Amino acid sequence: MSDYCYECAQKHLGQPGELNDFSGLASGENKLEVLCEGCGIIWVDSAGRKVLLAEEDRKEIEKQNENALFNPQVSKVQA
Image (cartoon, rainbow, N blue to C red; front, side, top):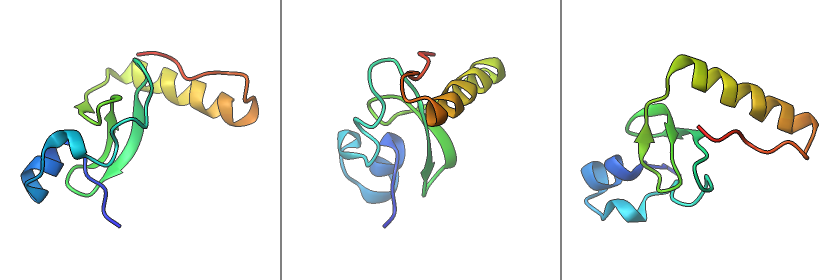
């Protein structure tokens, strides 16, 4: 199944962006790395909108997410 971000849902599927596949996967201010069929590997916010992260923010989130795999008590960093 193909998954689309907010912008690609509108562009490629002609549906409202709010109906994208990544909406609600990230919580609050958290960002999530996903594979969008239109964009490739991107970061999205809780609405499923593509976000650009500074390199140091991206590395910090990846480090926190990696730690969470080994320690479920660690929550995702807010960017």
